[in-house]
Length: 106
Image 1 (cartoon, rainbow, N blue to C red):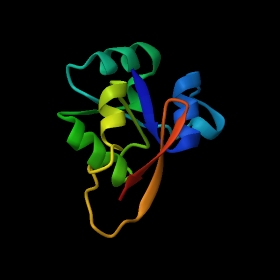
Image 2: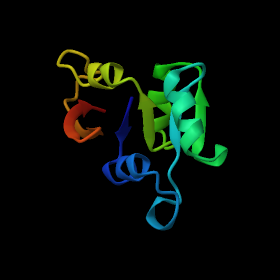
Image 3: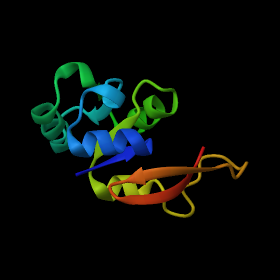
Image 4: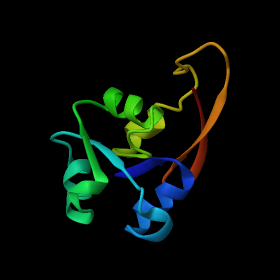
């Protein structure tokens, strides 16, 4: 299990912080996943946004509904694998997955 998204909020999620600069942390996780189980055991419900799929969580992170995604590390790394770009404009976007900074595309 890992978190991805905005660097400062990933740090908040990893440290379990819910106050000060972390008060606006919103974590997306997929219904029925072990990631959701973990997040629900670590954070109050008002910090969690439950989605139906990984793709829905990606859209929610992009539109600001959540600022962190909790999921299996393999899924989070797959979304930054070369060839998985979703647009042709080449706009790089740095995403944090665990303790790694990775480039993805808007």
